[in-house]
Image (tube, rainbow, N blue to C red; front, side):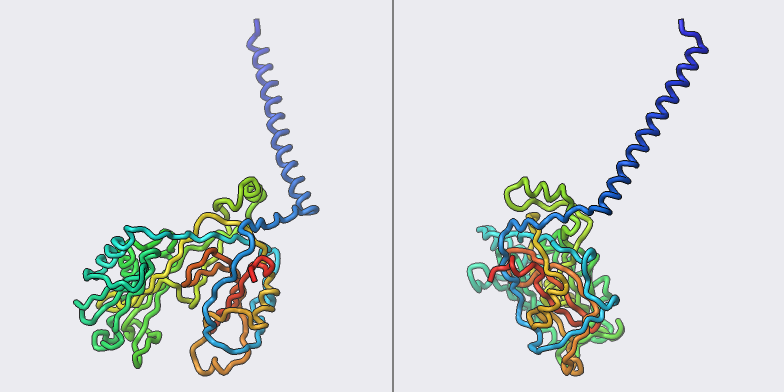
Length: 380
């Protein structure tokens, strides 16, 4: 029979053995991790090549440059240089855009959306898919033009001809303007899930000689502009080997996976988006809604270096999206670039893919875009 003393001694031995095993396992795990870390430092893993499963991509359909003029450029970034690896990626994702299809119910849906914002009259057909509504019940007529496939719309009114309705200091405060714009889209059931309300931007405005200019204070403001922006998009610059392996095991591109890195979306008229509003004390005066939905299908493509993109800018191959609207700046022949970054581009025209651009900008409001995918992967 095991005595109490022997049982105590046996328990102590088992405890010591267990403790040694635990210490050994901890030591083994940390040694293994340290060895892997040192190995990756000495022999860094080869980057996973982009899969380019969509094949050659169409050229980005940029609109006409806001100014047709040949400029010289200088890099005036914080570092004095263009971005480069490892901070600047060699590949990024390209996404398929959702292709919306016509439906026999879409006209009824458009009528419901129009009625929700006060257009109760009969629509006027402009084409098989585009319709117009007119409302004359307010202080001035309002007009709504809507596409019944995308439900993109333009809401207009001749408010600039009725200055007496907008005295200085009667503009809504900026938070109320954002809330009013949100309510306007929500009533039409068009506040898309990918719109980031937290990124909304406002600007106080005043009317001068039938044109809008920025107001210096709320007491001077007559109107407020609001811009809504889509959420940043995962770019895949940090996609792991596991994600790439999953791609290779599928036919074609795979669905979007979680990643830490994201890129913003840029639009044809920065810093404005394609979803914007003009709001006064009496309500909504103008609204433009052009939204394209990004699908979860993506594949990765190789990128131009920042230097290659800059060379295209110098050669006049960039899209000049924004240029300071003043006579002094229009006399300039040299543009100083203070920031170079990557983003995605969404325009007004329907596009098949969400593609990356290299964005060149400065503090004065100059913006230029260069298509970021290597030219060998772009159709002629």
